[in-house]
Image (cartoon, rainbow, N blue to C red; front, top):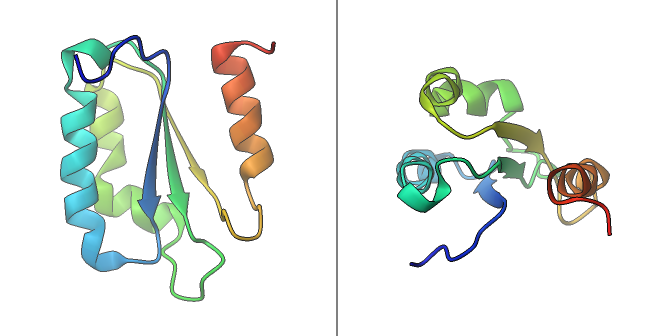
Length: 104
């Protein structure tokens, strides 16, 4: 199996690239429908919010139709905005990882 013994999943979306939204959504749906991931917690990161052309979380949720995805998904889904460049949101990502995987 490609996913092996996956206990959590982070899915990163480029929030500054509107031309890739539909492709990202298709990939997300593919991952969420994988049999091995039906109960694995998922964190969706809308990254690159430091760029002036980024789409807000509200816009991304709308474009992805996240309300429909969350209502149909079997796994818990969390969404966050991040900037890997300036560190925005990364503390929240670490908190999610600790809560999901346990704090060593």
